[in-house]
Image 1 (cartoon, helix red, strand yellow):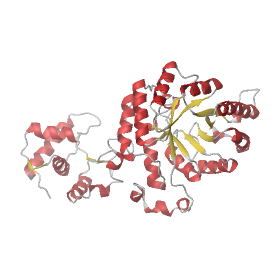
Image 2 (cartoon, rainbow, N blue to C red; image 1 turned 135 degrees about the horizontal axis):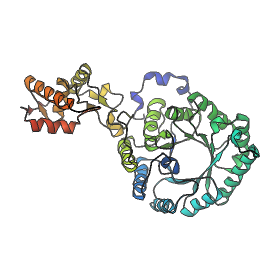
Image 3 (cartoon, one colour; image 1 turned 90 degrees about the vertical axis):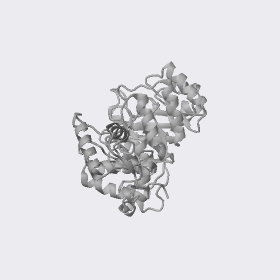
Length: 410
């Protein structure tokens, strides 16, 4: 049994979609953090050292496919050199490039990449004046044939497929099937719903025998649930980025999808979930973009118990019984994170007792009350959002010289 499915609602497994005997058990990850789509997030930049470190960490986490080249209109010399260095690492990962022209295909091949993702806008309602859907199909055929002539594994990414007329999309898919190895359904502007994407993936799967990837943007917070819907409809690969970085509102966050897929639909990504927090922090440091505290899976407050006294009392009592994690969504250690009993302006006796216990210390009722008062007074001086870390709490009580005793052991 997968690690996280036991923590999900039992109603998940009663849903008709999960009752099907042939439902998928696994899905592949194709990560784009190091491809142009990741760095197209406004203000984002990754140095060569950062890229190499992230590539190693992604491979170590179990990511099986990774795009490492693809800035438009052409990758820079620095990007190419960095990609060559990543290729030379001989990581156990399929490496690819996103391209739009034959010149970019040649650059990718010369860089040592054997996989290629060819981006073609397929929404025939948006073709320039004087062009037609036939021109879109002709362009896709020429590019895919060029890549396959050089022995490259060729995926045609149908950009804006989710706004394309089904009649034209079917024509394109059927005509291009002999010319490529995979298709990607692109929701380039995040316009589709889980129900719509489940339907669309089912349609495309009926038009071709080629494997299907999905490329989903998060404009309306649908990326993760859309990815799960696509998997249940037959998509074999989900394109992700660490922390969901990418242009506009980003793409499917690797860490959130890896947890959600396993927990809610029983589908494994093959990712080492315990590496997710560390991977997320590496990308955050490298780009210089902080992880929101409340971000699912990897945020510092993802497993932070609120300051409400009655809630903290419950968790303190569970902690004493060795059952703290039973009241959490799942054990945070499984994703490399940890839980906290928040220490802030509403510090109470249970806040103090719990956090003292983590230091191997305890105190009598009077001393606990003194610590509560001191912490509240100290935190009241701060403005805006303010919490004390467990490490800060330990230093605080030590520096103030409170009368502490060794905690009783069971």
